[in-house]
Length: 163
Image (cartoon, rainbow, N blue to C red; front, side):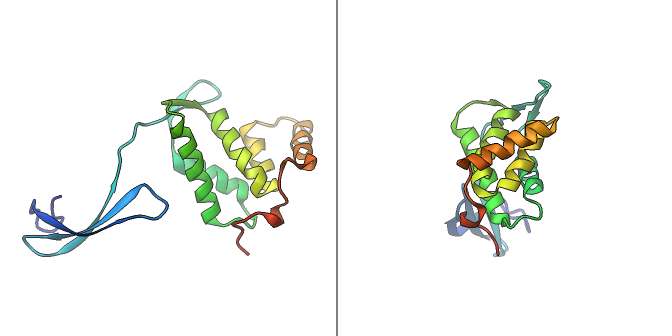
């Protein structure tokens, strides 16, 4: 690793730690030339996933876009940022675990909805209305009936809420 200060190519790793909950290694380094210290983060390079949209367009999977959709659905709900981040991380992990380089936006939306119904019924309805492209009040009613039939957990009993 090249020193960012003096560009010396020899550095020593003086501390190495796994970043909790992430597939990242944090390394504290010291340059053998100028003796300044700096931090690097190491993560495995993984194959990119292509998302097949409803209209058959293809685009690169973007965790931040997924998180943005989750955050929009959870807006003004008592759901912590950590819970939303964890949902995005778990969804990405499930996609990667399938070992496919392509997946549909519908499949991704389904994974998120399956988790959101357990976390918060209102966030579930909001997310479902976008991902399932609700076009009528009947479609909203159908989504609400899924929650009423007990397929979702009472949000007051879910973990990870911020109070």
